[in-house]
Image (cartoon, rainbow, N blue to C red):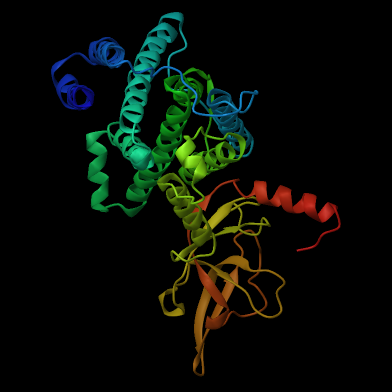
Length: 397
């Protein structure tokens, strides 16, 4: 009766996002009716699972039994690591005040909202994962499809308008946060649910939700860094699971010497490739760390700027460019102060905003590495700190 769960999920999505906002008081719709809808879903899933004899709350498809070798333990470790990493980044990027209420009544209302949503979603996830994984042949494909389903039902309809790419930065943020990052977390939660039941996915997703809803201050990094953390941690989590636990196999599978590649591994590999390609500028944009204060107050030491690959003909006075010539030990990011022609060559004169005089050496077109199109404040302190530690150990870059 899996189709009943899908129908209720679809109805919940329509009611919550289209019907309640326009027909019901916002407080009543958000904090009363929405939790009731998720509770109703939880009850239906529980009854169907019980009727079919499925244990969806807690089971263990692993051989080992020690701490850190069960799915629920790994969910605790991965969730804790993700939160710790966000806090660490917040030290450099700053913290902001939580938008949620912390009055006693507000905490109780938010608690009911979060718990009802979490239980409804994760029980449904566990049921669909287990129901679709009876045949091992299609279990990994089922996990990916379930992860995609629970990613899509959490996207607000109005945000789909961002996919028109009328505003490229907004569209990119939507794709990174609402799709790629959300799908990464959902994929890990679905895999944890496959290995250990709803209790494992509830622990992982619950830690993230409780941190977001009930921490009085929250890290305030740029969305690019949020997308990076939200993608790389599930990737690492999946790798930890593969190293740490061993799924139970039937005798038939034990005799087989062939190893299949799971869709989860393929998708995670794609994410890793995307990150590497972005770092090396294969998407036309590459990140660069600012190591000096010569461009204050626009950029400061520790900022990360995104450099777009553009031709010299496109650069105008006032643009901020990255350039390097044979006399420089590392690239420089300065503003174009003057452009003039000298014979067949175009000459660029640059100047740091914090400097009183222009740079002595002129910049030729073949020296230009790109134009600055975006700035992420303070995120560069992480590689700077790492580089300084390595240098202190006597290793030079």
